[in-house]
Length: 377
Image 1 (cartoon, rainbow, N blue to C red):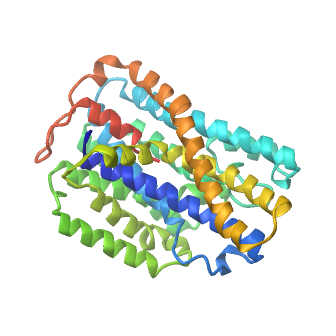
Image 2 (tube, rainbow, N blue to C red):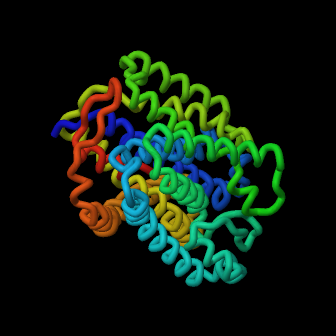
Image 3 (spheres, rainbow, N blue to C red):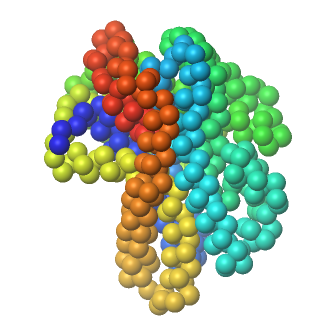
């Protein structure tokens, strides 16, 4: 099998991003349940593993702009976009959220018993709400990122009435305006504070990378891409503490460099291409499913097994990784892929059109464009 590295680099990075978030929650579980210390004080926090989220946001900005190339300025394009994005994001998230609720009920967790009905409804509606602990997290905690994703999709869908250049400018301008308003007004209310967080600028960074790629200004040699990747990892290794309001720069900046480095120009063959593609295809399932998997496994280790290093530093991490991969593969095969195929088949004529060709950008078949539509968080 031969595969274009432009997309495979993004697929590999999606897999890496999901892996980083998985490591974060595995380390947190070990720290709190075995070492008895807060994750922020844990000696295991040797890298900013949450940066996986920032990588996802930058990838999303790039891929949404890229995969919409045949939609800009087309009548009814927002419907096709909305259907494709909903099929990609909503069913799997609702499924894992429902499973999380069942798990909370089974173990008698305060996360369910003390949750308001509004916070439960907001978890399904992709709206920010305070949970039982007063934190702005949905029932499935990692879903806070999807609240940003869905808002970004709404902005993008509305902008599709314009031509490509204007649409991208409108979306970027809106993101920058919201972040600026948040910085200047410092809103106290939950929803305005959430929606104006500067982390939304990471979507704009991804769109910026797309435009550089679109205009032929991101064709970097392998040496330059390697330099960008090394520089990004080095910067992250020096910024392990949560940067707070500056996250969009301290972590988002290196995340942008990593995505730029992933946009290569070579080819990948055979088993490596298959492995990279699967890493990307399974990343969304890994991202969602590993949370209940880690929670259930940590409780089982705490209650049923001896409290030793081999359990928590051996058995538990292996269980989380292997189970997450297996569940993600099943979810992709039986939930994600069928729904994405159905969404694409709803618009057979447009999906068969060859994508537009920009200045300095090589032609790509619509199949590449459809594959790119799946390459996002």
